[in-house]
Length: 323
Image (tube, rainbow, N blue to C red):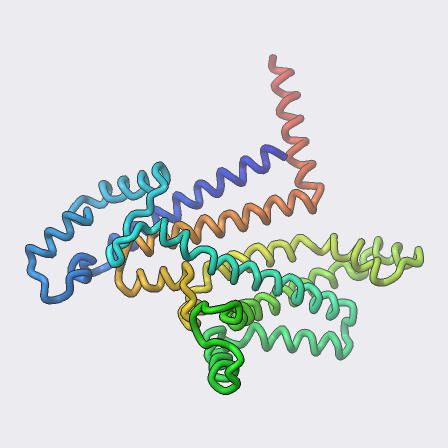
Protein backbone atom coordinates (compact mmCIF):
# COMPACT_ATOMS: atom_id res chain seq x y z
CA UNK A 1 0.00 0.00 0.00
CA UNK A 2 2.89 2.34 0.78
CA UNK A 3 4.27 1.77 -2.73
CA UNK A 4 0.90 2.72 -4.19
CA UNK A 5 0.80 5.98 -2.22
CA UNK A 6 4.41 6.86 -3.07
CA UNK A 7 3.76 6.24 -6.76
CA UNK A 8 0.74 8.54 -6.76
CA UNK A 9 2.62 11.29 -4.89
CA UNK A 10 5.43 11.13 -7.45
CA UNK A 11 2.83 11.53 -10.19
CA UNK A 12 1.53 14.67 -8.45
CA UNK A 13 5.03 16.15 -8.45
CA UNK A 14 5.46 15.41 -12.16
CA UNK A 15 2.08 16.97 -12.96
CA UNK A 16 2.94 20.11 -11.00
CA UNK A 17 6.26 20.57 -12.80
CA UNK A 18 4.65 19.93 -16.19
CA UNK A 19 1.82 22.42 -15.50
CA UNK A 20 4.29 25.11 -14.41
CA UNK A 21 6.42 24.54 -17.50
CA UNK A 22 3.46 24.65 -19.88
CA UNK A 23 1.89 27.83 -18.49
CA UNK A 24 5.24 29.63 -18.38
CA UNK A 25 6.00 28.66 -21.98
CA UNK A 26 2.54 29.69 -23.22
CA UNK A 27 2.76 33.11 -21.57
CA UNK A 28 6.34 33.68 -22.71
CA UNK A 29 5.47 33.13 -26.38
CA UNK A 30 2.14 34.99 -26.21
CA UNK A 31 2.31 37.97 -28.61
CA UNK A 32 2.59 41.41 -27.06
CA UNK A 33 4.76 43.14 -24.51
CA UNK A 34 3.58 42.92 -20.86
CA UNK A 35 5.74 45.93 -19.94
CA UNK A 36 4.10 48.06 -22.63
CA UNK A 37 0.70 46.87 -21.43
CA UNK A 38 1.53 47.85 -17.83
CA UNK A 39 2.74 51.36 -18.75
CA UNK A 40 0.16 52.15 -21.43
CA UNK A 41 0.51 53.40 -24.99
CA UNK A 42 1.92 56.80 -23.98
CA UNK A 43 5.06 55.37 -22.33
CA UNK A 44 8.40 55.98 -24.01
CA UNK A 45 10.62 53.19 -25.30
CA UNK A 46 13.16 53.91 -22.55
CA UNK A 47 10.49 53.54 -19.86
CA UNK A 48 9.37 50.25 -21.36
CA UNK A 49 12.92 48.89 -21.46
CA UNK A 50 13.53 49.96 -17.86
CA UNK A 51 10.37 48.18 -16.72
CA UNK A 52 11.33 45.08 -18.70
CA UNK A 53 14.64 45.03 -16.86
CA UNK A 54 12.93 45.46 -13.49
CA UNK A 55 10.47 42.64 -14.21
CA UNK A 56 13.20 40.38 -15.61
CA UNK A 57 11.61 40.24 -19.04
CA UNK A 58 14.86 41.17 -20.76
CA UNK A 59 16.41 37.80 -19.91
CA UNK A 60 16.37 34.76 -22.18
CA UNK A 61 13.65 32.14 -22.12
CA UNK A 62 15.79 29.56 -20.32
CA UNK A 63 16.97 32.07 -17.72
CA UNK A 64 13.41 33.17 -16.94
CA UNK A 65 12.19 29.58 -16.87
CA UNK A 66 14.93 28.50 -14.48
CA UNK A 67 14.23 31.44 -12.20
CA UNK A 68 10.48 30.75 -12.22
CA UNK A 69 10.90 27.03 -11.49
CA UNK A 70 13.41 27.69 -8.73
CA UNK A 71 11.28 30.32 -7.03
CA UNK A 72 8.10 28.23 -7.33
CA UNK A 73 9.28 24.80 -6.20
CA UNK A 74 12.35 25.54 -4.09
CA UNK A 75 11.34 28.78 -2.38
CA UNK A 76 7.53 28.52 -2.69
CA UNK A 77 7.50 32.03 -4.14
CA UNK A 78 4.98 32.67 -6.91
CA UNK A 79 6.24 36.19 -7.51
CA UNK A 80 4.69 39.60 -6.99
CA UNK A 81 1.74 40.95 -8.91
CA UNK A 82 2.76 43.59 -11.43
CA UNK A 83 -0.59 45.33 -11.10
CA UNK A 84 -1.17 45.28 -7.33
CA UNK A 85 2.45 44.97 -6.17
CA UNK A 86 1.35 42.28 -3.68
CA UNK A 87 2.89 38.78 -3.41
CA UNK A 88 0.77 36.32 -5.35
CA UNK A 89 1.04 33.68 -2.62
CA UNK A 90 -0.31 36.11 -0.03
CA UNK A 91 -3.25 37.09 -2.22
CA UNK A 92 -4.03 33.44 -3.01
CA UNK A 93 -4.13 32.58 0.68
CA UNK A 94 -6.47 35.52 1.31
CA UNK A 95 -8.84 34.48 -1.48
CA UNK A 96 -8.60 30.72 -1.01
CA UNK A 97 -11.22 30.42 1.78
CA UNK A 98 -13.98 31.83 -0.46
CA UNK A 99 -13.19 29.45 -3.31
CA UNK A 100 -12.77 26.38 -1.12
CA UNK A 101 -15.90 27.10 0.94
CA UNK A 102 -18.08 27.47 -2.15
CA UNK A 103 -16.49 24.42 -3.78
CA UNK A 104 -16.82 22.18 -0.72
CA UNK A 105 -20.40 23.20 -0.04
CA UNK A 106 -21.35 22.68 -3.67
CA UNK A 107 -19.65 19.28 -3.58
CA UNK A 108 -21.61 18.26 -0.49
CA UNK A 109 -24.81 19.12 -2.34
CA UNK A 110 -23.55 17.19 -5.36
CA UNK A 111 -22.98 14.08 -3.30
CA UNK A 112 -26.14 14.27 -1.19
CA UNK A 113 -28.60 15.16 -3.95
CA UNK A 114 -26.83 13.47 -6.87
CA UNK A 115 -26.39 10.09 -5.17
CA UNK A 116 -29.93 10.15 -3.79
CA UNK A 117 -31.39 11.02 -7.19
CA UNK A 118 -29.31 8.36 -8.95
CA UNK A 119 -30.20 5.64 -6.44
CA UNK A 120 -33.87 6.62 -6.61
CA UNK A 121 -33.81 6.40 -10.41
CA UNK A 122 -31.98 3.06 -10.44
CA UNK A 123 -34.34 1.43 -7.93
CA UNK A 124 -37.31 2.56 -10.06
CA UNK A 125 -35.86 1.60 -13.44
CA UNK A 126 -38.33 1.97 -16.30
CA UNK A 127 -40.97 3.69 -14.20
CA UNK A 128 -42.10 7.29 -14.24
CA UNK A 129 -39.87 8.07 -11.25
CA UNK A 130 -36.83 7.05 -13.28
CA UNK A 131 -37.89 9.19 -16.23
CA UNK A 132 -38.60 12.25 -14.09
CA UNK A 133 -35.25 11.92 -12.29
CA UNK A 134 -33.31 11.71 -15.53
CA UNK A 135 -35.23 14.63 -17.06
CA UNK A 136 -34.30 16.72 -14.02
CA UNK A 137 -30.66 15.66 -14.44
CA UNK A 138 -30.70 16.56 -18.14
CA UNK A 139 -32.16 19.99 -17.38
CA UNK A 140 -29.51 20.66 -14.72
CA UNK A 141 -26.63 19.65 -16.98
CA UNK A 142 -27.94 21.53 -20.02
CA UNK A 143 -28.41 24.98 -18.47
CA UNK A 144 -25.34 27.24 -18.92
CA UNK A 145 -24.09 28.20 -15.48
CA UNK A 146 -23.50 31.88 -16.34
CA UNK A 147 -27.02 32.22 -17.76
CA UNK A 148 -28.51 30.56 -14.69
CA UNK A 149 -26.47 32.88 -12.46
CA UNK A 150 -27.79 35.95 -14.25
CA UNK A 151 -31.39 34.70 -14.13
CA UNK A 152 -31.10 34.00 -10.40
CA UNK A 153 -29.78 37.52 -9.82
CA UNK A 154 -32.71 38.97 -11.75
CA UNK A 155 -35.26 36.85 -9.86
CA UNK A 156 -33.98 36.61 -6.30
CA UNK A 157 -32.00 39.84 -6.04
CA UNK A 158 -33.78 42.39 -8.25
CA UNK A 159 -37.38 41.15 -8.34
CA UNK A 160 -37.85 39.50 -4.93
CA UNK A 161 -35.01 41.15 -3.02
CA UNK A 162 -34.33 38.00 -1.00
CA UNK A 163 -30.60 37.68 -1.69
CA UNK A 164 -27.75 40.10 -2.43
CA UNK A 165 -26.75 40.31 -6.09
CA UNK A 166 -23.01 40.45 -5.55
CA UNK A 167 -20.27 40.63 -2.93
CA UNK A 168 -19.81 38.72 0.33
CA UNK A 169 -21.59 40.91 2.87
CA UNK A 170 -23.24 37.98 4.71
CA UNK A 171 -23.88 34.24 4.49
CA UNK A 172 -26.74 34.94 2.09
CA UNK A 173 -24.18 36.05 -0.50
CA UNK A 174 -23.03 32.43 -0.91
CA UNK A 175 -26.45 30.87 -1.54
CA UNK A 176 -26.78 31.62 -5.25
CA UNK A 177 -23.13 30.85 -6.19
CA UNK A 178 -23.32 27.50 -4.39
CA UNK A 179 -26.58 26.54 -6.07
CA UNK A 180 -25.34 27.51 -9.53
CA UNK A 181 -22.08 25.59 -9.09
CA UNK A 182 -23.75 22.49 -7.68
CA UNK A 183 -26.47 21.87 -10.27
CA UNK A 184 -24.26 20.48 -13.07
CA UNK A 185 -22.48 18.22 -10.58
CA UNK A 186 -25.79 16.94 -9.24
CA UNK A 187 -26.83 15.97 -12.75
CA UNK A 188 -23.54 14.21 -13.54
CA UNK A 189 -23.49 12.33 -10.23
CA UNK A 190 -27.12 11.29 -10.60
CA UNK A 191 -26.56 9.87 -14.09
CA UNK A 192 -23.32 8.15 -13.08
CA UNK A 193 -24.85 6.67 -9.94
CA UNK A 194 -27.85 5.36 -11.83
CA UNK A 195 -25.63 3.75 -14.47
CA UNK A 196 -23.33 2.17 -11.88
CA UNK A 197 -26.21 0.86 -9.80
CA UNK A 198 -27.91 -0.72 -12.81
CA UNK A 199 -24.69 -2.58 -13.68
CA UNK A 200 -24.86 -4.50 -10.39
CA UNK A 201 -28.64 -4.51 -10.04
CA UNK A 202 -29.07 -8.07 -11.37
CA UNK A 203 -25.76 -9.53 -10.24
CA UNK A 204 -25.82 -12.97 -8.60
CA UNK A 205 -24.87 -11.73 -5.16
CA UNK A 206 -27.71 -9.19 -5.28
CA UNK A 207 -30.16 -11.98 -6.15
CA UNK A 208 -28.75 -14.07 -3.30
CA UNK A 209 -29.14 -11.20 -0.84
CA UNK A 210 -32.76 -10.76 -1.86
CA UNK A 211 -33.36 -14.51 -1.64
CA UNK A 212 -32.13 -14.45 1.97
CA UNK A 213 -34.98 -12.11 2.76
CA UNK A 214 -32.99 -8.92 3.26
CA UNK A 215 -34.92 -5.67 2.91
CA UNK A 216 -34.46 -3.75 -0.32
CA UNK A 217 -32.93 -0.79 1.50
CA UNK A 218 -30.33 -3.07 3.10
CA UNK A 219 -29.54 -4.64 -0.28
CA UNK A 220 -29.01 -1.22 -1.81
CA UNK A 221 -26.83 0.15 1.03
CA UNK A 222 -24.75 -2.91 1.85
CA UNK A 223 -24.43 -4.71 -1.47
CA UNK A 224 -25.28 -2.57 -4.48
CA UNK A 225 -23.79 0.81 -3.55
CA UNK A 226 -20.36 -0.42 -2.31
CA UNK A 227 -19.82 -2.38 -5.51
CA UNK A 228 -20.90 0.54 -7.68
CA UNK A 229 -18.63 3.08 -5.99
CA UNK A 230 -15.62 2.99 -8.32
CA UNK A 231 -17.04 5.07 -11.20
CA UNK A 232 -18.93 7.23 -8.69
CA UNK A 233 -15.69 8.07 -6.87
CA UNK A 234 -14.09 9.06 -10.18
CA UNK A 235 -17.01 11.34 -10.96
CA UNK A 236 -16.83 12.95 -7.51
CA UNK A 237 -13.08 13.56 -7.73
CA UNK A 238 -13.14 15.15 -11.16
CA UNK A 239 -16.27 17.08 -10.23
CA UNK A 240 -14.70 18.60 -7.13
CA UNK A 241 -11.55 19.68 -8.96
CA UNK A 242 -13.60 21.15 -11.82
CA UNK A 243 -15.82 23.06 -9.38
CA UNK A 244 -12.85 24.76 -7.74
CA UNK A 245 -10.86 25.30 -10.93
CA UNK A 246 -13.88 26.25 -13.02
CA UNK A 247 -15.46 28.71 -10.63
CA UNK A 248 -13.93 31.77 -12.28
CA UNK A 249 -17.08 32.60 -14.26
CA UNK A 250 -19.36 32.24 -11.24
CA UNK A 251 -17.05 34.28 -9.03
CA UNK A 252 -16.97 36.95 -11.71
CA UNK A 253 -20.76 37.09 -12.08
CA UNK A 254 -21.36 37.31 -8.33
CA UNK A 255 -18.21 39.37 -7.59
CA UNK A 256 -16.87 36.78 -5.15
CA UNK A 257 -13.23 37.67 -4.32
CA UNK A 258 -11.98 34.14 -4.86
CA UNK A 259 -9.07 32.60 -6.74
CA UNK A 260 -11.03 32.33 -9.99
CA UNK A 261 -11.83 36.04 -10.12
CA UNK A 262 -8.20 36.77 -9.22
CA UNK A 263 -7.03 34.75 -12.22
CA UNK A 264 -9.47 36.49 -14.57
CA UNK A 265 -8.14 39.83 -13.34
CA UNK A 266 -4.61 38.69 -14.06
CA UNK A 267 -5.54 37.53 -17.56
CA UNK A 268 -7.29 40.80 -18.42
CA UNK A 269 -4.34 42.88 -17.20
CA UNK A 270 -1.71 40.44 -18.55
CA UNK A 271 -0.28 40.12 -15.07
CA UNK A 272 1.82 37.01 -15.67
CA UNK A 273 2.71 36.26 -12.01
CA UNK A 274 -0.99 36.11 -11.14
CA UNK A 275 -1.84 33.83 -14.07
CA UNK A 276 1.10 31.52 -13.45
CA UNK A 277 0.43 31.37 -9.72
CA UNK A 278 -3.27 30.58 -10.18
CA UNK A 279 -2.56 27.87 -12.76
CA UNK A 280 0.01 26.25 -10.46
CA UNK A 281 -2.49 26.43 -7.60
CA UNK A 282 -5.27 24.85 -9.67
CA UNK A 283 -2.87 22.14 -10.85
CA UNK A 284 -1.96 21.40 -7.23
CA UNK A 285 -5.59 21.35 -6.15
CA UNK A 286 -6.61 19.06 -9.01
CA UNK A 287 -3.66 16.75 -8.38
CA UNK A 288 -4.55 16.48 -4.70
CA UNK A 289 -8.18 15.76 -5.57
CA UNK A 290 -7.14 12.96 -7.93
CA UNK A 291 -4.69 11.65 -5.32
CA UNK A 292 -7.56 11.40 -2.85
CA UNK A 293 -9.58 9.56 -5.54
CA UNK A 294 -6.74 7.09 -6.08
CA UNK A 295 -6.44 6.47 -2.34
CA UNK A 296 -10.21 5.99 -2.18
CA UNK A 297 -9.85 3.38 -4.94
CA UNK A 298 -7.35 1.48 -2.82
CA UNK A 299 -9.65 1.73 0.21
CA UNK A 300 -12.79 0.60 -1.65
CA UNK A 301 -11.26 -2.02 -3.97
CA UNK A 302 -9.26 -4.72 -2.13
CA UNK A 303 -7.73 -5.84 -5.45
CA UNK A 304 -5.55 -2.72 -5.59
CA UNK A 305 -4.19 -3.40 -2.11
CA UNK A 306 -3.59 -7.03 -3.02
CA UNK A 307 -1.86 -6.06 -6.26
CA UNK A 308 0.71 -3.82 -4.58
CA UNK A 309 1.09 -6.08 -1.55
CA UNK A 310 1.74 -9.11 -3.73
CA UNK A 311 4.13 -7.08 -5.89
CA UNK A 312 6.11 -6.09 -2.80
CA UNK A 313 6.19 -9.69 -1.52
CA UNK A 314 7.29 -11.04 -4.90
CA UNK A 315 10.02 -8.44 -5.13
CA UNK A 316 11.24 -9.37 -1.64
CA UNK A 317 11.27 -13.07 -2.42
CA UNK A 318 13.11 -12.50 -5.68
CA UNK A 319 15.71 -10.40 -3.91
CA UNK A 320 16.18 -13.10 -1.25
CA UNK A 321 16.72 -15.78 -3.87
CA UNK A 322 19.31 -13.68 -5.66
CA UNK A 323 21.21 -13.25 -2.40
